[in-house]
Length: 315
Image (spheres, rainbow, N blue to C red):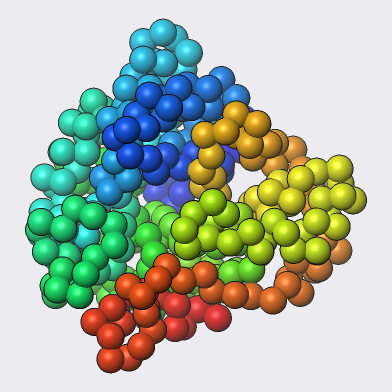
């Protein structure tokens, strides 16, 4: 399994395929069952967040599996995220995450978005009046405190553009270990990858298939003729080709499916090998940003410009 891991800039190990767990409280039983099935398939990295609503289910499934001897805690990697309404106190927020998970520590804690929301905003799509001024220097100092206290083994960021990473590095004592961003063959994040490579920050890709099945997502990636032809050539699936492309960039990928067939298909991407011609053809695909509605507007007069800027300098 060593070949299916990467080492972060602080020496910690990250499995290169992670299972996304966005779900509601009503899906708790399905989430737990899917995580236990994923463990048996070989998944060892589980990605959650406060706003996903899945932390209790993730914790229950993993604790049960550990107690039954299915897996050791040291072999599991748990990622969770600081929600944007908790920037004022990341330490308390992480304590609450650990309580929901029933764990003593998590492996990776990420700043979910480089924006701040008012304390009562506990829903994923904020309104105009929900935003407040972000003090990222104070937030990151508190993230570093989480690390010092042993509440997590690594800290990082999510949805940070190259510009925002450079701003953070101006005051950070600890360089982020990871930047988790949306990345797939039709949105290749060239600038982010280049900057992260320069500073030894690992890039982790969410929505590596373009987010099919989500309200904001598209099947354009897996339906693309280039991806489909490469899949046919290798007797693989389009999803496996897209995932293998992400892995070929030196990134890890976070895949979200509770469908057993797709879960098996996704982890099967580890066995696929793409040649240089395959990668060359994928790089000819037209890039297209997938936007998440009005709250990600690039309108310079919009109150959401802070988030929109994430995309302004990336392509």
